[in-house]
Image (tube, rainbow, N blue to C red; front, side, top):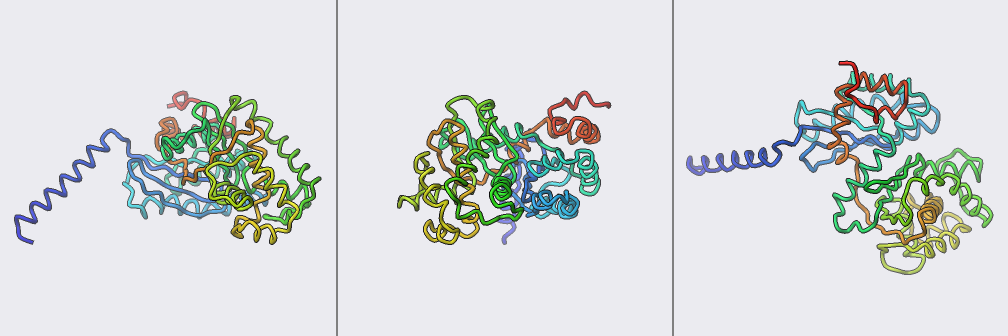
Length: 362
């Protein structure tokens, strides 16, 4: 390349770097880790990349083995993900532990505090157990950012493996009661089985009604936590790739942008009495979705009923808690006071997050 052209290229590159620096000026250098029931997602403020590591936290917890076997891959992921994404070095780092970590705190918060101290020592990342209400705030913030004007309901419905959220701008409901945990509870109640997934079908009408009664008892807090008339947009795969396509196929309709309570109930009742194979063939369900479809239909029906039986909007997005974590100033203050946070976790549990880091000893 001629010297003058090379100089121009160099100057253009420097200008681009300068503009990028100006665009992100004032934005803190932060890395966050969204630690859910099935793995870790990592992101850096100002960058769109999301790095992932698959780790099954829910399986060992549900089997009563705790988190011990998941700690080595967790530490490895916290070390390796930022490097593999080319994230900036020396950024403030924060790990947010969600459903599986809340389950671990309920089981033995003192042991969990020891585990979190070990994770920080080995990886440099301070992990907080994020309460359900705060996760709801993260979820709505992230959905609003991704959907924009397409979000026309007051709340989003996010069903994970270990927990579910009905999240709004100011009111949210959450429960340690996601797709897999609800399915497991049905397996125990109706089939006396701890297998996951178990063979729920065929179900008798009496068993369907028993499942509905069980679910109503688990969802009583919705009317207390949410305003009357709350409407929902379902954004996660149990609905967007399981329930919604099944309802559409049942009634020979194109892909559904919303589901009426009537069609939802009819799909459940027309298929609960079939064998799993017959239902999967009839509805064209993928094998990985079919095993959970009846329990998912029951769960979504119960949630729609509990929130007032409005039509359920459907809009799949790749929602993470990263946008909320990366802008959580309080979370990063707790990361800087992690020993104090762990002391409060031991004494008061996951509500430690809501206490004030400024009251810690300096």
